Image 1 (cartoon, rainbow, N blue to C red):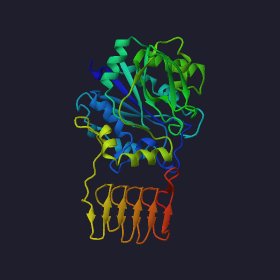
Image 2 (cartoon, rainbow, N blue to C red):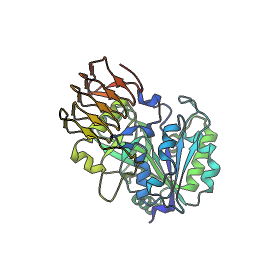
Image 3 (tube, rainbow, N blue to C red):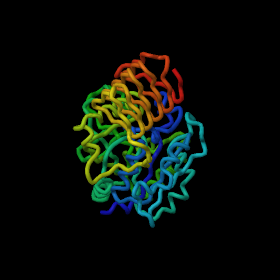
Length: 373
């Protein structure tokens, strides 16, 4: 079955989620990832590669960076005649408001949803990184006759990771009996990837039911309550998966993709991750530069040492600088003799006087955007 029978929705992070530092300036979807991409590129590319050409992107707060990045959406290889990416907004701009949830956003745009011509909808989060053919998900959903199908990823490290994620309980018939929070009480869990497949009719009904029942209900809440009434199935995801719901999650996911074997699970021939490209000069490496196991973006000037790190566009790294296990975002300037280890340095920072900046792999040090140290 062609996935163009479904339209796509890219949802925002739950209002209870806050990623230290980075989230103060932009939504998770517009976080820089691996120096080249934004996190939102992954769900939109999955939809585009699956043949979906009508996509709605929901934004709840600080929309500038994400709207600039998506623009017309043509760089996502959306069909130029029939395809369209719509950016839809929720009027409640208070980031931490109790009412600022996905159901509120869908209700404010319910007339647009109801006008969509496709029979099905696939909802994916803007805060998770994974590859998935949504055509296969839609085929499985239709073949099962289910009301709702949820995408999940089976893990054996749920005690240490995925602390802000939801989990699903699955019976032998691959039916979902409940959606819960990961409390870190067991190693093996089925992590819910906040990805849904259902008919447009069922989706609209669930949104209206949730809105009528409680102003604080989310889509996950109403589906959890309906587990005994509706046929809700699970579909297992295979391959690389990362949830970026904390600074530690973001840091760990970024650096683990420096491993070629890990990265090859996500980046595959025939399944490109589209992004908005920037025309800039190649990076210049001076004689004193030493680089190992790193992603280096265009436009950088590098005289120092970079190990196991990600360097964004237009970064200046001067003589005697040592950067290890860190993420340095675009247009940062690091002056001579600075040592940075286990850190996330936000855009436009200028490191001058702080000669030794160190975090730990469990708790990376964050340097604010446009900060001078």
